[in-house]
Image 1 (spheres, one colour):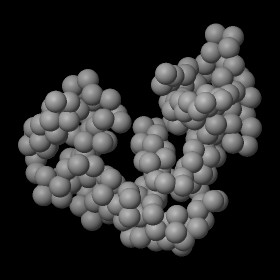
Image 2 (cartoon, rainbow, N blue to C red; image 1 turned 30 degrees about the horizontal axis):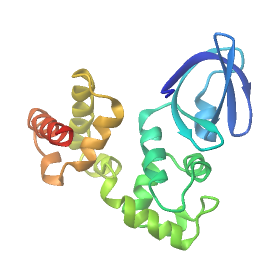
Image 3 (cartoon, rainbow, N blue to C red; image 1 turned 90 degrees about the horizontal axis):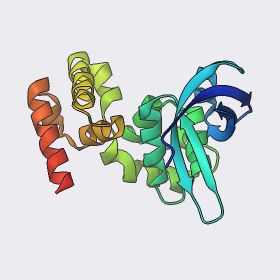
Length: 198
């Protein structure tokens, strides 16, 4: 399974890039926001990859930040949302804006995603509301709490856990847990991880 590619940007399309890794060109589908963050053609760059395997094809989707990949994975869990729809959603909204739309149940904003109607928007809100990280709202109302969460993510990564696992654990913390000190949150997070692995 390909998780990351580092190579020369060979081609840049509207919704894809071709990245040359040691002479092999990989076709990677990306959101417009990711394409805008990439280096120019002919330059070296690195991109996170989500590999999706179907019966008849293997497709690569690329991201510059772990939270983009996290939200892509979350959107795929919603019935009726495919990979192309998820990428289009991340072209229209940043992960933070997407999270805000879900938490505030802003179905109008979600229906701006091509392929998502009112029913789809309602499904996204109901199925993903409990999986949001609550970072975007906290960053507006409680800067210190948001800073603690960022410190917790750094702490978990420093202990060898992946970005995705760190974000996943944070989504399981209660609001009460998130108001505690970083050290206390770290203990709770490690307990969640150990229980999950049993």
